[in-house]
Amino acid sequence: MEPALASPTIDRRAVVSLFSRLRTASGQANPLPFYAELRSMGDVVPAPWGGYLITSYGLCDQVLRDRAWQVPDSGWRARQGDGTRWGARSSREMSRTMPALNGMQHTRVRRSVGNMFDRNTLPVLRVSIEKTVEKLLDRLTGELRDGEADFSSIVSEELPMSAIGGWLQLPPADYPLLRSLAHDQVFTQELLPSASQLARSDAATEQLEAYFRRLVQERRRAPGDDPVSAWLRTWDGLESDQEAADEAVYLLALLVFLAAPETTATLLSTMVWLLLEHPLQLGWLRAHPQHIPDAVEEVLRYDSPNQVISRIATADTTLAGVPIEKDRMVHLMVGAANHDPAHHLDPHIFDVRRKASHLSFSGGIHYCLGAQLARLEATTLLTGLLRRLPGLRVSAAPVWAPRVGFRRIMELRVARS
Image 1 (cartoon, rainbow, N blue to C red):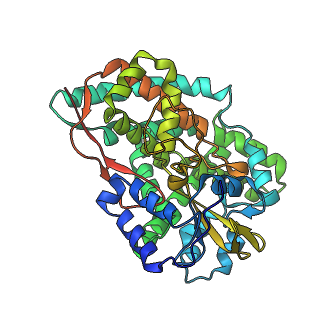
Image 2 (image 1 turned 90 degrees about the horizontal axis):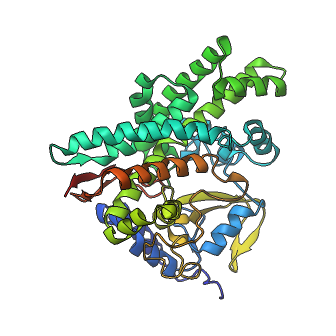
């Protein structure tokens, strides 16, 4: 199939209007018509604020796997100027973490952590996550005796925080503050953050930096069997300068924490919402629990927690016949690409029996480190729900945060039939 080239007649105002509507309550409740509208403009659409929007699955996958495309690292951000969003304190700090590193810098940090959630780690985490799921479902069941309950705050927000906090051996008393800071910090990674959102992200980043620097120093003084202590031992062997080793471990701890509570919480709430809205499929899953992992993958395809991934051209190039200048940013519209009819049959249909690929964990060398942990949390939670709450139903429309890049269900009211 020939790629649909970007149309030179695209009205800038039409693209601006589309993203404005996408941020509204109705746009967040169902972004698919807006993504279909965006795809109709072409596979490569000029972004009104500069750069390009990539809408097709094939091109997004190609860019993610091609090392000629890089992430917006600290050097690129500095070239954009202090007065831009890229000069914000939160942006500068994130540019030092692994997802914003290129070349040998990225390779070095990635090798230092290896496969964090491997065959040895996941079974241990599974036991802890299963216990947490049971406790959270106990609490949810108790709340439902009095009528409605918010699944998002009781379960979805708590499980990822407990999983990553427990693994890093953080004090549970710190979880509420850390979760709140993570929700504020993510604005620096949004597609078009406002000045007020960047200010919130900057403030959250400052507090998170202080917290995780203290954590590294505490583990330096009293090392244990936790990941931070293990990273310190690794980096002491890589760096002759202890301060440089501590800095590398601080950035790892910050990244691993930030990657968990925001996106996984959204995955869990979205999973429950979609399945409760499709009771026949939920019933089929209850009879065929071996397909629970397939259902989780379909949730990730149908409504990805992260809808936009950005890359930078390292040289003048072309995509689908459209010239892309060196240093230009492209936004990979994952939410639209996962619904590309050229790649998926009937992509608008949610089908837990579908076995289809998706780009929701990115791709290439920057494939999500925590993908297996997120899958484990989702499959464990869904297994518990199918067993314990057969009569669960959505009692009110979900409340979504007005975002584009990072989806978030802020409230999901449920009840029992």
